Amino acid sequence: MALKTIIEPFKIKMVEPITMSTEAERKKFLKDAHLNTFLLDSDQVIIDMLTDSGTSAMSASQWAGIIDGDESYAGSRSWKRMEKVVKELTGMEYVLPTHQGRAAERIIYTHLGGKGKTFISNTHFDTTRANIEFSGADAIDIPIEEGKNPKQYHPFKGNMDIKQLEENILRLGAENVGAVILTITNNSGGGQPVSMENARQVGEVCKKHGVLYLQDMCRIAENAYFVHHREKAYADVDYKSIAQEMMSFADGAVMSAKKDALVNMGGFLSLRDEKIANECKNLLIITEGFTTYGGLSGRDMEAIAIGLDEVFDADYLHYRIRSTEYLGNKLHEMGIPLMLPIGGHAVYIDAKEMYPHIPVDQYPGQTLVSELYHVGGVRSVEIGSVMFGRYDDKGKLIPSPMELVRLAIPRRVYTQSHIEYVIEVFGEVQKRIKDTKGVKITYEPAFLRHFTAHFESL
Ligand code: F0G
Image (tube, rainbow, N blue to C red; front, side, top):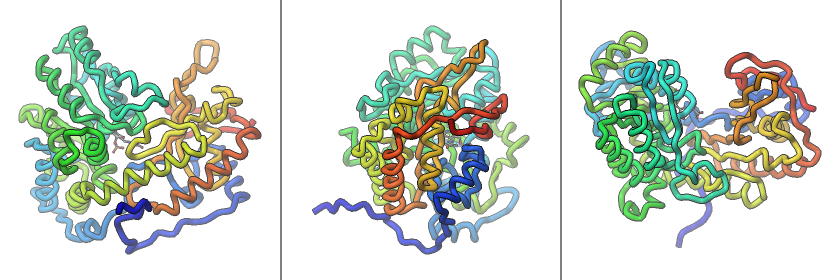
């Protein structure tokens, strides 16, 4: 008999209070923050779904590891532990510790990039694209067609279009391709998984043309869960072996440990090629630190070593993915329009469809973000025209193709009753849809406006 209720496969040993607030208080907090949830204090938030990055709760073992951290400048015991775990997982000989994912990205893309180079990905995450473009290179995204349609079901919507990959390499010339990057799971595409078959095929094309193949592995364990449950040949293979096989196709990997290593800070770069690794180590020493700690304390490396092992626990992964799916499915049943199927770390709401009476230049996504906070103190993030919109010569908004709101779920932090609460908040927000008005921007900086822009309700 399989029982249906999802329970957390852990007990709570230490608690962090949530500051509760009333609707009237939140109205004031939101007004003072100019309707921008990035400008709220965390104490003003009840359920924080801004990001799943660096927000995980560590286990008792990880905290014990923190005490055991070896802070030696060179050859730290904690480094040896982290190096061993990473090598075993990636199968790659060279590991460079960094303070977070984008530091690893900056190092590898500074080395591989530059004017005239092009990088090809299923979808470049923002920081990946930014590091590539900052080096002077170009970045192109080629997700499969199904990945671009929020409503269409596909078991592996994070896959890369293999035909387009080959066409692009031939068009650009293999020597001009900086690298091919497979983002696993595909965050910008909705946390959608990548199949083993696709990861293998990308490897075959790269090998054939002599192009370097990198994987962004920050959610590799969550991806392994989907492979196990959706790809027939892997139904009997355990999660860690799936991840290991997937990484065996790649020449290198970039990791933000703030996701699937279950820590609050950290990252690394893994490589097979000694020459590239040595060049990258020089860059590492200039800005991150010596090769046996990079940008990390000994205790951070200890926690990463333990977290990277814990994350493959079958009960944990089952709870993690089921809980995200539960939230998504409940909202779907209530008639909230969202991206389907539900991905691994987040639920994406289609705000344009939820508020059909609010035009894109009145920012339906930002409106929903405000509503969720106002009604229930739930903090989310707009991924739409506030984040990606541009203006034409006449100052008219060129909107983003989609107006989404992301509810990212921190790992091991919230319980099922917190999830039930979020569902109830959506119910209240839904009742007010017809009377909800859009917002206008009253201040915006020239660059990355979503972080600091000010809004007013219309
Ligand atoms: N790659 C992917 C796929 C990511 O999702 C992120 C971060 C990074 C790289 C960069 O890692 O933050 O450690 O420097 N994503 C966070 C998010 C910020 O909210 O999705 P980092």
